[in-house]
Amino acid sequence: MLEKYQPVIGLEVHAQLLTNSKIYNSDSAAFGGEPNTHVGVVSLAHPGTLPKLNKRVVEQAIKMGLACHCEISRHQIFDRKNYFYPDLPKGYQLTQDRTPICKGGFIKVNTKAERDIKVVLNRIHIEEDAGKSIHLEGEEDTLIDLNRAGVALIEIVTEPVMKSAEEAGAFFSEVRKLVRYLEICDGNMEEGSLRCDANISVMKKGTTVLGKKVEVKNMNSIRNLQHAIDHEIERQILLLENGGEVKSETRTFNVETSTTSAMRTKEELNDYRYFPDPDLSPLEISEEWLSEIKATMPELPEQLYQRFVNEYSLPEYDAQVLTETKEMADYYLAVCEFSSNYKAVSNWIMGPVKSYLNDTGDSIDSFPLIPEKLSELIEMVEKGNLSFANAAQKLLPALLKKVDEDVLNLATRLNLIQDNDEGAIDKMVEEVLNDFPAKVKEYKKGKKGLISMFMGEVMKKSRGKADPKMASSLLQQKLNEI
Ligand code: ADP
Ligand code: MG
Image (tube, rainbow, N blue to C red):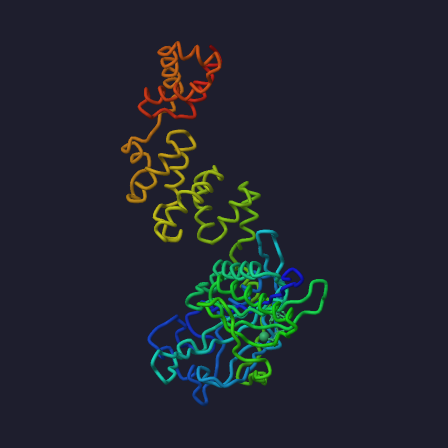
């Protein structure tokens, strides 16, 4: 039954911009704070106050547009979206209706089955956030906190092109990755800095007319978004299969039950009476300003990924993992300044470094070891002065406790330096073979398993310090010659 239908999903993602002050006045835009402390007369919509546009907001929105391959609008106005709600002091939200700052564009996402799916965008526009209504348990009154009223947002609106919860989740996660790379939003979904509404419909496979959509409001995690979509798809298909009809309505997601329930139908929806705001002058973006903004664009995950694959010869998987965050990619690049064993560096970061971070819950920006020291350790392993196991399990943890120590000194003190003096190891191999003539005969007759016994003896002789790779190859060579 499910297979007869094609789900269709379009997302509207709100990202709170990282500006110091609000979008139309100088009140602090910081998250939290004592309720109603970031509220000047403009945020409170006192009569006679006027909005003044924050330049940083425009720059950050344009950066996102450039990262998403959008067309940047050079002439635009702001519109009033009128509705009444206690957390909206002006009685209207300042937004962009017909002249969004960015048009079209796309973001590429990956699912398990498909790479580089282009999720086409309809637009990105600038708007202001509303305040918060707080309903405390046991309180009859609704409390209002207006700190968030007037904080700058961008809204990223996709076309109805996604086909599954997995794809929508990948898109949401990709948006978070981009805004963090661009440093225009902290991407913190729990605090609501990044949140998303999902529009979901289903249609019979083979048809081209989209089904009626339902909008699920304000999801603040990838998991919730995906659960809401999966639940909605199933609910709509069941409805249709039982001869019912999907109503265009706004629904809310219930985290406890992983289901959605109706909030209001489209018919009850406000007519927002959009019209151009007469208090804000039209915004013109000059060629010069646009070039300045372009010049501040950082290298984006897609470009870094290509560079890691092409210049650093990393497997696609490594490139994917290392570009997950800008900080991780930066750390990788910093270590590669000192080491040209690019794949080894990648193995170290994806292996021991990541598992350290997982254990401590830290992110890579607070990883205590400077890139140069990690590179020294990696080089020692690559040269055979140190076994990988000792380096990862003993030296690295010791170094992380004493980050100022000299790497070689510490390794020596911990007795971890292995002998890779070919002459010395060769001599020990010789001695071992002389000590066990009977075993050598057995080996030559075909008991190849004895090689590990010989290796054991060589390692014993070296008191565990011979470079095992070298010892093993010398042993093999000698045994073949006999
Ligand atoms: P509305 O007028 O209800 O706000 P829009 O056309 O502005 O609708 O689209 C809002 C969002 O809903 C967009 O992300 C769009 O991709 C998505 N959308 C539109 N129609 C559908 C549909 N039939 N199924 C799923 N998503 C849809
Ligand atoms: Mg809409």
